[in-house]
Amino acid sequence: MRISQRALQIEPFYVMEIAKAAEQVQATSAYKASAQKMIRLNIGEPDFTAAPLVQESASRAIRDGATQYTHATGLGKLRDLISQWYKDRYQLDIDSSRIIITSGASAALQLACLALIESGDEILMPDPSYPCNRQFVQASGGTPKLIPTNAQSRFQLSLAQVQEHWGPGTRGVLLASPSNPTGTSIEPEVLRGITEFVQTKGGITIADEIYLGLSYEDKYGQSALSISDQVISINSFSKYFNMTGWRLGWMVVPPSLVAPIERLAQNLFICPSTISQFAALACFEPESLDIFERRRLEFKARRDLFVPLLNQMGLSVPVFPDGAFYAWADCSEVCKKLGLAGSWELAFAFLNKAYVAVGPGRDFGVHEMHKYIRFSTASSSAELQEAAHRLSQLIGDRV
Image (cartoon, rainbow, N blue to C red; front, side, top):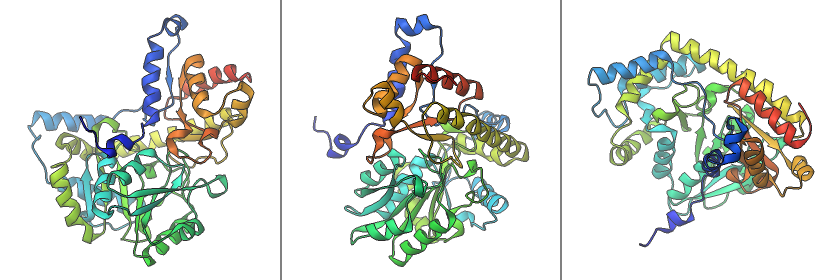
């Protein structure tokens, strides 16, 4: 059977490969004899499940038979509630007609890329960045151009870099704030500068804002939609709203993009999950919002607990994360101490010897990725403390 070049060229999602390796380790006699639990800090998934009212809303939809197709752009009531959420939380007037409900943020990114990118178009992205984002660009025929970043720029693109790398084939930029894997946000004045420059070039700015609700500093907790109504914002119910497996997201697009996106959504997805949409209506109840805010503060507390422990054992976090639930750690000194070539080998050492799964740097880019490793801090404080204890014992510096 002939397989397409598209399928052959796509790289594995190494975080998921680590997850598979963890299952194999759990099947070994050594693991079973250890009586220890595998601690999974490799996948960015909240340990909190959907809020009670959200679960009740889903059950009610099933019980009432509200399970048939919706409009391709989603339930009108849900779009209205998201519009009101932008007004209440960010003081933004976003007309609900510009909001399109999608089958997760992944579907939103796919729709945006298919609607805006032609074959050969170049999209500028920071290195490191979330690996699936560049795969969406490639799947639409575009070319993701990864631009190396560093701690001085908060691992985000600078305006000077965008200007320097903009060429005849450049179509736009794909940014994430807060970022996966670093948990860092773009400085507001930098984000404005990039957005305005891209507009002068007739380009597009796609802003991955799925962690925006999990910002911990007011300075960074603002949407790129406040800069221009030409920004395409991608968001999700997975992270702040704790609905990972429900596969529900949304996008905010310029008015001129609504009809093309709708046509694509009709053909590719028909509609998002109806049950998930009815469940998500309850996300905006005051009781649910109170829960999400308490959980946001808990994620912040977990960050405050875990990042100093990483620093103490030589896994230096060069930029303190201001959002999301990740720590992007420089592991070069630890690798040197343990005689390992880089983060890929270190990830398997942690997995096989400490039963702690983490994300190797190679998932997130190409520039010096052997030096970095990503930890998810979405697990409970008790699990994070136990993980730090095990890793410090393996490294040789007790915490």
